[in-house]
Amino acid sequence: MSQNNRAKSLTASEALYIDRRRRGMTQARYAKIHRTSVDKIHKWEAGLVPKDRDGEEFPCPKVDITWSQLSVNEQCVIMRRRNRMSRTDLADALGVSQQWVSQMERGRQNAAKLVSYWKLA
Image (cartoon, rainbow, N blue to C red; front, side, top):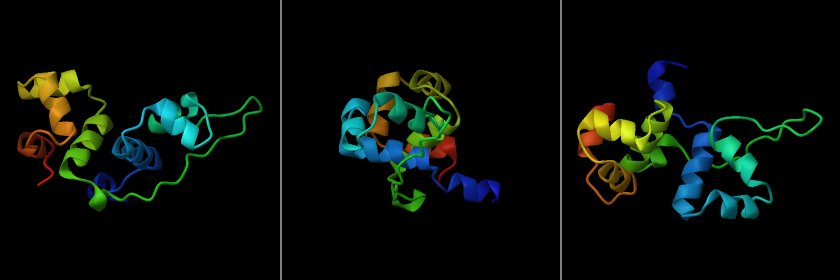
């Protein structure tokens, strides 16, 4: 898969994270609806594969969300997470407040500055 195609695809863990955010759920509540532990949700969202005591893997639940279905704000969240940046790191790089980044990621601020930063347009 080319670099450009990878940027336009979601991993299973990213889709799970977006699904939880769209539902406005904490990891604890999301774990309950998936009948699993908060630790597994946390690990799946981090791109890790939790294992049981015998080393058996717990595969990430399949969530059918594609890159093209993401809002521009959600695309910016994914790009920040892929680049392993905190909101504070990103705010510092852009010369804005962490609160602004948070509001933008929630769709409460215009995302044009981040779209330009991540070269999404």
